[in-house]
Image (cartoon, rainbow, N blue to C red; front, top):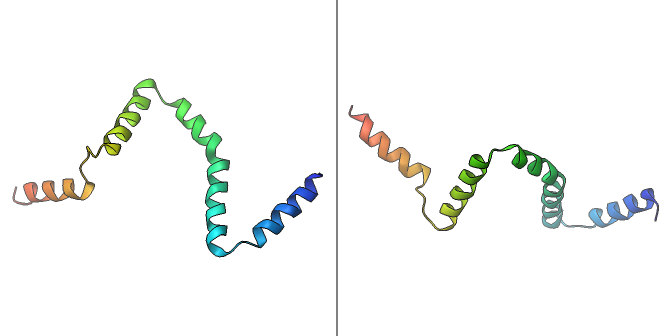
Length: 82
């Protein structure tokens, strides 16, 4: 199949999608296209930075985190009278 034929075939499939499916496909396409950028950015990080990110993800996954709003509320209360 020629490149032009493939593009037309893809266009026809995309053109027939409803709004929800089109939005979903758009997100998938962006993720696919940005995948290499994300890998390059990850590879630029130091080992310590990578480990810090992985630790943070693990803490979030195991519900060992404090919501940003709670932290702000605590410190606003503590320092509003100072």
